[in-house]
Length: 224
Image 1: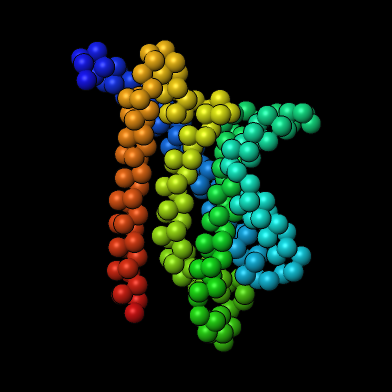
Image 2 (image 1 turned 90 degrees about the horizontal axis):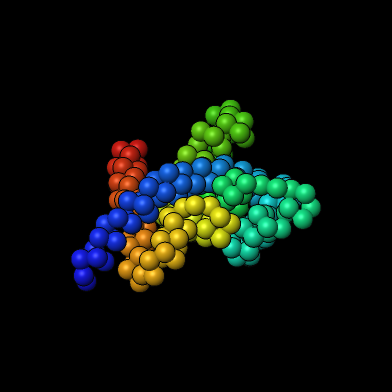
């Protein structure tokens, strides 16, 4: 690799990393936070087994798990303007990513809720707690500990999926890389470089995931 190419990589690294820190990470954090709220609500609705609400929750999950994320982005950003609904690129990406990820996380949390022994509910009722108190103080905390690994995996996957936001003109890392490639005609090394930056972000999150799992395991042992 010649000196000119090394110079290009060094110069482009910061140009790619900066939108990663100012756009990719904020997009991920905001969208995943909203997705968790949606997921908890959808999971609780299914767990409560209220027929009409459960069917609505299942319909939402069916739609967003069964259609491609890229199609969802195009429908919201390019399709909705046809009916007079205009959404800026970043809010559109947040909306779609949160709804899409919420559907997947809802299933992880639902499975975790169902894994909590039914005796926990009965013990709560015997202690005079209401249904919501039992869910908030007993069942949901245990379920979230169980769901932590798959939810962490979903977060890591979302970091990589944010590259799709470039298709609706969000200037995140991948779009910036595409612009540099169009100017320099060096797709191989530049796409490898942005891939390594995504790998860096994923590696940091994986380390945090392992630390979180270790802490939860230690906490569980103390409770036992």
